[in-house]
Image (cartoon, rainbow, N blue to C red; front, side, top):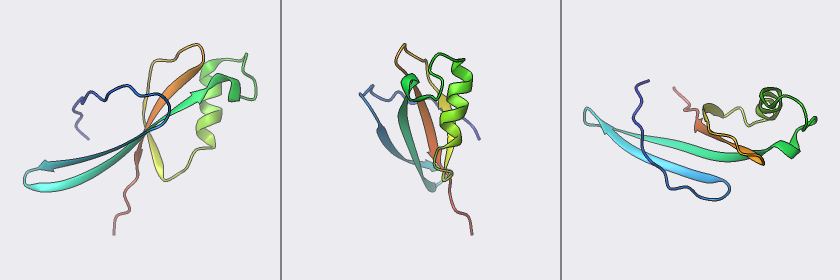
Length: 88
């Protein structure tokens, strides 16, 4: 997949993003979501943050694919997902 960077206004909390693009005269709809994963929600909040992210992602909805892990803060890490498409 080719990538194009589109700035998304920063919002607090969860963001639900729908984008419609036309590529070679074919329209496609893309559905993204940004969720904030809080360090305090980890089983071991004092442990390594990579382990914490892995733990939180293991419980995430399988209909969504990890797309991007944003810059972490002291409280949370923003993670972007793209919805998996059902292909027939």
